[in-house]
Amino acid sequence: MFEAIFYMAVVAEAMTAALAAGRRAMDWFGVCMIACVTALGGGTARDLVLQHYPLAWVANPWLLPLVSAAALLAIPLAQLVARLRWTFLVLDALGLIAFTIIGCDIAIAAGQHPVIVIVSGMLTGCVGGVLRDVLCNDVPLLFSSELYATVSIVTGAVYLVGLRFGVEREAMVVVAFCIGFPFRVLALVFKWRMPKFVYDKGEWE
Amino acid sequence: MFEAIFYMAVVAEAMTAALAAGRRAMDWFGVCMIACVTALGGGTARDLVLQHYPLAWVANPWLLPLVSAAALLAIPLAQLVARLRWTFLVLDALGLIAFTIIGCDIAIAAGQHPVIVIVSGMLTGCVGGVLRDVLCNDVPLLFSSELYATVSIVTGAVYLVGLRFGVEREAMVVVAFCIGFPFRVLALVFKWRMPKFVYDKGEWE
Amino acid sequence: MFEAIFYMAVVAEAMTAALAAGRRAMDWFGVCMIACVTALGGGTARDLVLQHYPLAWVANPWLLPLVSAAALLAIPLAQLVARLRWTFLVLDALGLIAFTIIGCDIAIAAGQHPVIVIVSGMLTGCVGGVLRDVLCNDVPLLFSSELYATVSIVTGAVYLVGLRFGVEREAMVVVAFCIGFPFRVLALVFKWRMPKFVYDKGEWE
Image 1 (cartoon, rainbow over the protein chains, first blue to last red):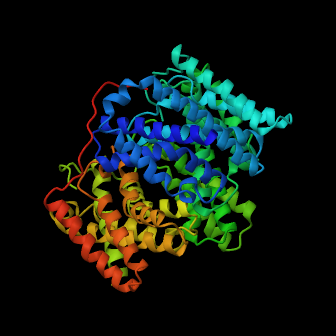
Image 2 (cartoon, rainbow over the protein chains, first blue to last red):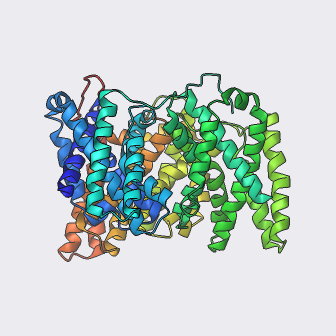
Image 3 (cartoon, chains in turn orange, purple, cyan):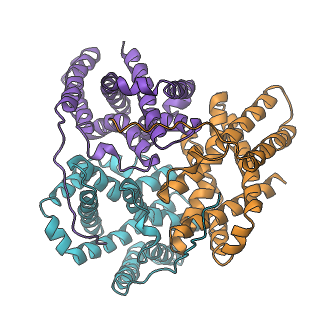
């Protein structure tokens, strides 16, 4: 079940990343690369930071062809993907929670400090989108859009606290989904955002 | 004393990074992320390059909340930070020297070649600002502004040569500050820059 | 012979990267940094991904001064470098094949899966240019230009299959050059590109 959500989310992220590549008129290779970076970049960042080798996609090398295939499939289906916007946002929200839990689990298994556990979950869920935006030459959406990293941080904190209080892992995974997923969906529906810091005095430094 | 300079510099970098985030109208989370990347990205790059695990901020996880708090504090104090421009530039100059020395020390302890020792100091002092500019979608200031990396390289070289000649580490730290810090401040005051390479013939490749 | 190609390619990449830096009016330090990132970034990415330490340029620290010297040499010779456009493209094509083979060899020696071997060759050959474009604030050329990564992937696949069938390494290196090099040159001459995915429906997500 958890694994099914993981794969659906990876495929969904690959397909929406393909649209981002298409907006930059990239070729098919570029589409695959943007999709791989978006879907697998968060886990890669986490693994580099925690020295957790082999990287997820090196240990499971068929992840790369899977993500690339999903991205290429999005090219003829672009209209459909765009029309199914909310389906993809929902899958992405499920993926955010799944990625967060995976990131927390890996940091916990490595005996990391609670702060690092939560950061590890957040990196896993969020860095892929940042790398996509950097490669597409945009300021990362993550830093100004509807609550996303916040959802990951809250979910990771709840998950970690539950485990610390001795709740079973399986139960806490369910709790994490029951809290994080509606949180993200509500943030999208009601456009919940963090307050912005707008500073427009001339450059300095 | 050295540690006090380190923390003041981290806080100062976090606060000025927050202004950079504010110029892109980022939200509070984005402000914290830009601050963390700016203040801790140089050390992270060095640690990845030298396989020096755990990363500084993974070993001292309260660095992340500290940097985030400093960045959030800069939001209400933005006017003040801008007015204290020179105070922050001075703190940043002290930080550049402190980061350079830390980077050199870590490479020396790992038995690296002198070239790598100096590069390690330079990466520690300079990469954070490059990552900040990449995430803010700018061409890195480091590559065209007043002498900064050069100060780090010169300071690292002096520090390393001193140690090789048998001078005590404490004495060389003082020497490094006495040379590097005024060098950077003078570069700012007199706008010392490296010669630029301006090439404006049409694209090729 | 192979090593000679490697060094010529590194020097050629450093010199053309210097022109890219010059187009952004970077200073001499920026020119050296862009050259180092372009010429050595691919191998660095591969080594981080495969935990192959020490990094190539940490193990051979004189690579950094060599690349920097080549980049600085390109400043007075900019006109010449631009006029020798095709010479540099040919050297770059040779370098692409050499880098691909090196990347494959390292992954094979680490006992990686065939998919990862080919990806390792592609990362070694292609990531440097992507990092250069990110630092120059461009959308990476690699994602929309004449066949480049494709050449690396095809070359890596041929090389790997040959080795698997028991052909000697020296012979396969020659075969890889005989296939990959004309492939890249023909792609440049006839402007072979991958089909593009152009998607211009408004933003979503």
